[in-house]
Image 1 (cartoon, rainbow, N blue to C red):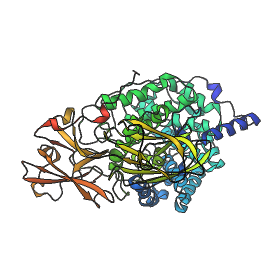
Image 2 (image 1 turned 135 degrees about the vertical axis):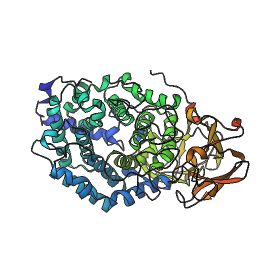
Image 3 (image 1 turned 60 degrees about the vertical axis):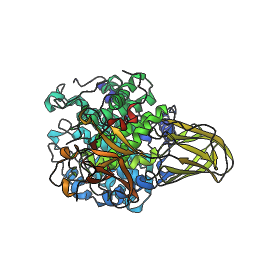
Image 4 (image 1 turned 90 degrees about the vertical axis):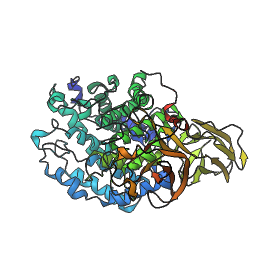
Length: 623
């Protein structure tokens, strides 16, 4: 891959700090305040849906519990001095990766969300110690002089440090962070021309993979400063609008089919689209979603990819579902949901979060996974550094922004979880919204809508594709329009304090057909949740591996829902089913069960299973 070196003189022009620049900075910041994740928000305001600011939403339920345990049992347990900061002070590395910038980004967002004193202190300490390591030339990194820029993964590391520092400026107004981010970005721009034309051949890794996160970092800095140089670097130097890589299946040099890198760059394109609308910027994201949902690219938990690379064989074993990729799939869905307002992306978010994402973390929050297979043993990653643990922390910190969205003058409810939000809706009327629900234990949801004075605005409710018989009442009376699975139901009326919407979403157990490698078998699901078998304690299965256990024939007529308070989450659920001609009783638990090893089973009659509802959505028109 040739590295574009156009406009060398333009990259060396100093920044002009005049009145017009200051006005531009103010305007950009004013626009970005409207979103929770301004680093991926719409600068044009053309999105169908707009995220709610982090500090305006508080989340409970299983999503809130995962946020809390990630903060208290994971992030605050890390030895940042030894594991993250030490090598940035020494700067003697020749290669390798730590992910300090990702950690900073997660810490900033968790601090902005929780306002917890310990979290704020950790965030401030991380940033202060990171800025101390910045050299006179602007460099922040681990590499010795001879290895800077040209060794894997130095630019990747620097990119996320820029991104994390820019986030600190956005959420907390820290000018020192913004100045450090600018100096580091200017260092990259100045040194870019020193990279050889055959850098991808030397590293044996495609350039867009080597510099994962670079474009998003530069776009974030452009939004925080208004400085066009950072935007131009993405558009001209990195040719972001022209990038249109297809789905490359299989791992081979130069690893072009790396899913995490693909999604990172396609998300950057969606962000650029909001600044410079061009339909071609949507193609890679749309292609990815189509491959996942129509090309057998996504497994039943919402995860995808084998050994970090695109795959379509539905093999559930081994290095399946890289956590970095899962995190960026979620970002892609969120961006497309906001752009288009299509509830299908909310369905994909829900499935992926509750299974693929939460399955990558131990129930107590402390341990994280690199991969989360469907079959066989799941292995925890052995350190707190590196991509997957920190991308997990980052995406968990963003989940509060995916529960509610502004929809014009109204509200869209995307994820069902105990939560509350303080908003201004309608004609700038303050409104408190609160969800009461134990979802996903049940599909009973009560949404309290309390405006400070009577106000008319729409409330859009995502009706999941897995629920064909949802009902909605407003203040105890059935709403006039039917709830259609796979669409948003709009409830528009004049709202008064004390009003409430009640949703009932029946969640019967269902059998979902497997495909390709899983053909001839079915998985047990309920709502968005996938069930798995934890064979521990079952004597008859003691010496059988996952492949053997997956050959068991279960009796669908014996499926029965069970309470399961302690295995995976408080007040969770499980189910029982009989197998081997009813001689063996199995207990199936929710997929995040850390000891689950089997998802698919054989049936005596496959006609009792149904296709996966997420695979039957309308196809996109983009090639």
